[in-house]
Image (spheres, rainbow, N blue to C red):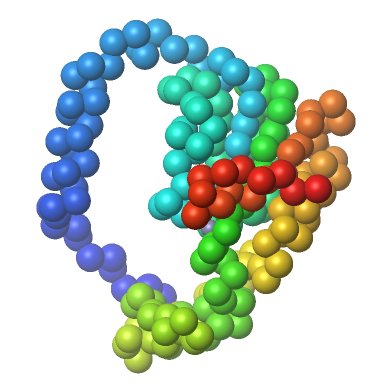
Length: 193
Ligand code: ZN
């Protein structure tokens, strides 16, 4: 049983996005003629972290590449679904797994977020050591059924995801799968061996 979700009211962010989009669309130009398959034939799986902009750190323009993002840039079943579609139906020939330093996925574990959620769905706070709920009502135990895919060892998380993708039965054997760490302090991509 779940209560009704609140009806959204217009927000400042909403207005900002609409305004930004109008100026983007006003000079859309030749992008109207872009083909559906990525022109440069590759895909990036990376973290949703707001400091990462794959278009900038990897030099992408609209139409160049697939970018698949989730919390951690993990090779979840859904990320692999996207990669398989990317190659099988849209022809990408090279895949990049890019995690990053200072990732939030290193700051919690499954039992921590699941028990926080069980008490309250409101945003929790982190004091540098531990997480704490800001409210003590409105929780759900559904979190215990989620694979949160958090990690403790950054380089190992890249190796694990590269291996999982390479060894997946739907991954073609001739697609290189590269692993990198993006350094949020320098903007550099560091290969993971
Ligand atoms: Zn991250």
